[in-house]
Image (cartoon, rainbow, N blue to C red; front, side, top):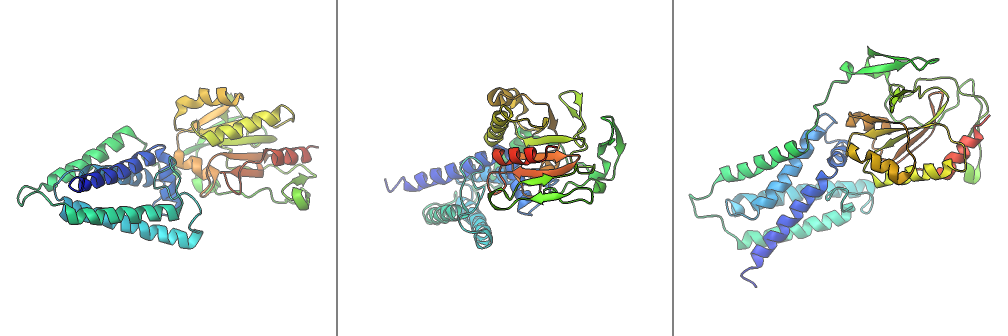
Length: 366
């Protein structure tokens, strides 16, 4: 048993890195978003860095099982990588708490807190130190660094081949449809993207033509508009075609949902909407789907039992800009004449509250 223990340890470490690589790949957009949220790269560079990191983990999983420079290069580099991750996790724990959030080490597959990930890395480093003392490289002159490079570049090639993406387009060159306030007509013109506000929009703020009453106590989130708010161009105004029909999202009351077809939490939110729509009159509902697993859209509507007009967004960075800075799916927005009266996102403090939305909608009815 003692003779074979180093091999067992190598297999365990290989399995950990391979699991980490696979978990980050499904869905890969979630890992890209994490890199952006951490401020490491912007959305244009995130697809490249995400695939290169996953390729590195895949390459380590393979390299740890072979003998080319295993002791003099592979193990030291792997330890250095894990130490860097531990430093990053230490910073995250200091700033946000040891038990808050998902570190993303195993993607969305196995959520881990920063503390759990830190402990996992320390244990892995200990195993690698044991390996360092109990394995040897190939005899001098027989080691091939080319073999290690081949493993990495092959891993990277496969990642870019399996998960293709469109290179980032400069925002200044994007053509956005500008919606006329009084009609549903739209035309495509060159627009300076700086004039389109894609930042997080706070819930409706009082305008000079509207009187806002905010109740206190348990219903403090309910906003009552005595007068109809004046028209404004929302960040959703560029989207005018849903399931083949022209729509002006900034005209009247609308509910806009930002969903991912394969997202279970998005489906749960859609089911809640379907449930309250049976007993309450809701504004028209429109869905912006992210272009990920779009073949699951029919399944999405079959499961939620609420077929809705939808549009698929090819621009994943744009999807998350609409959702909000560091926000996550599902996202739901209640609009009135382009004003965002109430918004929900994610699964924590700002998650969708169906009962609250009904109160807000009914309190705004004239």
